[in-house]
Length: 166
Image 1: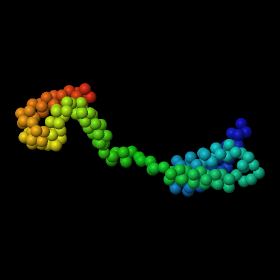
Image 2 (image 1 turned 60 degrees about the vertical axis):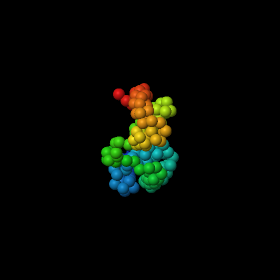
Image 3 (image 1 turned 90 degrees about the vertical axis):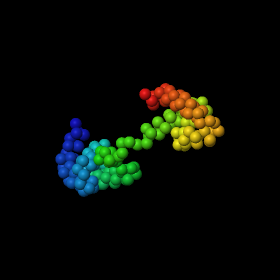
Image 4 (image 1 turned 30 degrees about the vertical axis):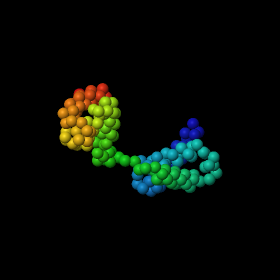
């Protein structure tokens, strides 16, 4: 009970002045100022010997100032916090989904037979026509067409297994 009476008396006598001083230290931010006052009073409660035989106000103001400086330094040491407004202007469509999807497609493509994979790479990824792909691969155009047909079926099945195709 003596502790409670001590804290109440300390706050009653110095709380108003300490809050005004803390408001100044916190740049007008009332919530931060109230936090400073609360922490200052808690420190006084935990260390009553620091106030024994001396005026309390200078010690309380020094503690509040030190807490404000520590708080400022802590905020400078970490990245600034962002509010909801910053999150609303961030693009919702980032490249993470696209990257994961492209890895899955590359994995599905790697699971194809080598001759099917080469035909898909030449016709779809390199954008070559059937005739150009045939010349590059050294096979007839009809073979490019049939391999492309079967390669696309196999690729669709591989993508379905990975949950990427209907």
